[in-house]
Length: 274
Image (cartoon, rainbow, N blue to C red; front, top):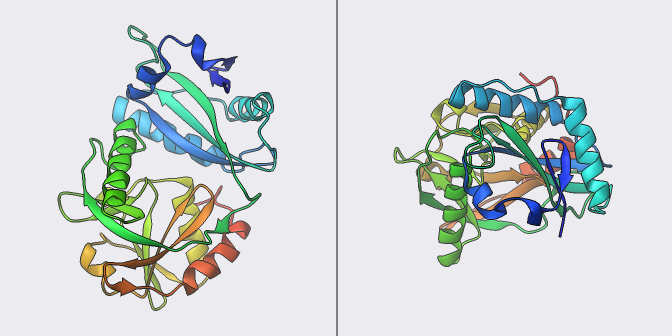
């Protein structure tokens, strides 16, 4: 069984009081792509977590970037993950991991090895569908949002689809699995703004920066299902890179912007993103 890092200490999950119920507790999370044992955008992930912790719980945290980076590197070694590329999840528990805890705690898990040592374009283009499902505190990387995304994914798969875009009660498309949905029309890339319920993420910042560097005009505007029937192209991202969308309902999309962005994204630095 893979070890985890709990508040800086490496432990076996079996030694935790109740690993499954622990993940059902309120927490914030970030999925992190590591390259060569390091997380190049760790400062961005920590910024997103600390801002969410402050806005949702009114709490501060003293997470040290250097210490978290060291714990990630050591955990990858302990679990014998390949150094070239892996997915790691950092979870922050504002109310503690166990009942009765009165302090903020963190947990680091090594999720899975990744096939490529850099960001790539997914080889498979998938059909998109939408599911109406609101999460509490929409727009933040919470455990509740994670559960809503999983519900949307399972619902779409039961329908025979592959990608699930979650839709708010107001008809706004919030994203896919906590990451942004982008549509491209001509030289314009559109995505739902954070103010309308989209979730901030390192990959969101990365793909929007890559769009600008590719000469696309980035417009943040609430996306709807009707817009999916009129755009030229649609895409999303995950921890491994660019995910191109094949189509929505009877609409089929081009794949030109996704290809260009996949070539650009590895040359984009978001540590100074604004």
